[in-house]
Length: 165
View 1 (tube, rainbow, N blue to C red):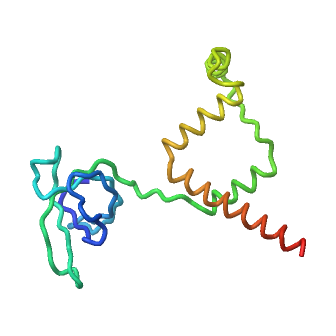
View 2: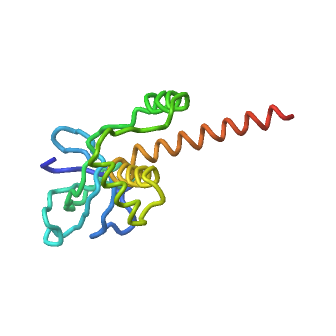
View 3: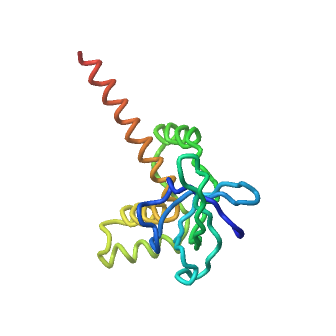
């Protein structure tokens, strides 16, 4: 991303100056839309790597203010394939949940952490470390999985309760 960006005042919090925020911007030239984590300010001196940002406002978004944006992180547009995630959840329900890395290195490190008392078992160490990594590296995927899991459990419980009537 490089260039001049446009966003709507409606996408901004009340006082966005200097705060790390998430917002949707479009490239003024290509019209491509991005979801970004950024800092914005009306003074470019307050940002490390400022780029021009036009904030449109008003009932017809025909009023423009010139701001500056420092993009911290860009959503590359990869959306979660919900259908694939749902079918994967269904497949895993019918399979064993054992994960085998076939790695002496990983096994050694996990065993060490277990023997040191940081985890109750190698399985707990493996689960904890993998879940922490997935939460950090793929927060959107984890969030979508949680939503689907909760909805699935809600549907299952509702079905069980209606059977009892």
